[in-house]
Amino acid sequence: MKSSLSLEKAIDHAFANPKKNIFDTYSCISFFAMKNETVFVPVYGSTASTWELSLKENAQDFLLTDMDGTIWFPVFTDSSKFTKTDNSIHLMPAGLRTILVYVCSLNHANGLVFNPYSLQMLLPKKIIKILLQAILQTELDLLDI
Image 1 (cartoon, helix red, strand yellow):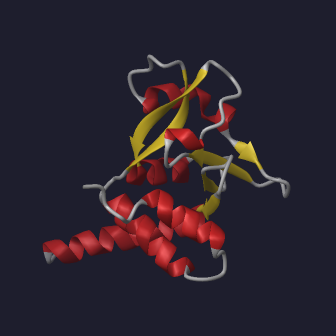
Image 2 (cartoon, rainbow, N blue to C red):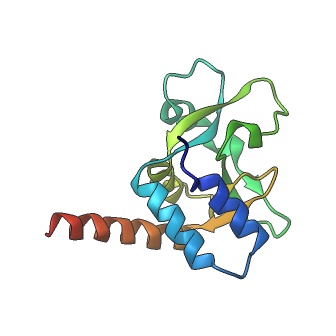
Image 3 (spheres, one colour):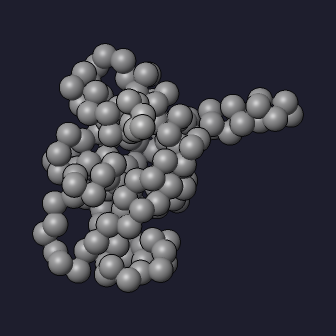
């Protein structure tokens, strides 16, 4: 039985209600990051062994710039949210928490954009860092450290 709560539903809800319940959306993202929920990232070639190896040299190729000139790293909640414009680009699964940490390491990206070609949601690095700190604190609290 599939869960009624999904990362994709949280993103869609945030898009439909941009000013309402944003903290609920951030809580959902934190929850799915703690579980390291699968998301999809663009890579070159369908035979790459890991997304880390594929993106190590090519991450800049996938960055998107919005109308304000802000640069975002694209992440997809489902492969159907990806609009294929180049046959050499494929999607590879990755853990959400891992991607949040990865995006923070990108010098030129201001954050990530979920589903940039459909109902999208922007997640700036400042918020990502707050979410990652909250996740770490929650895990430490669970360990009673």
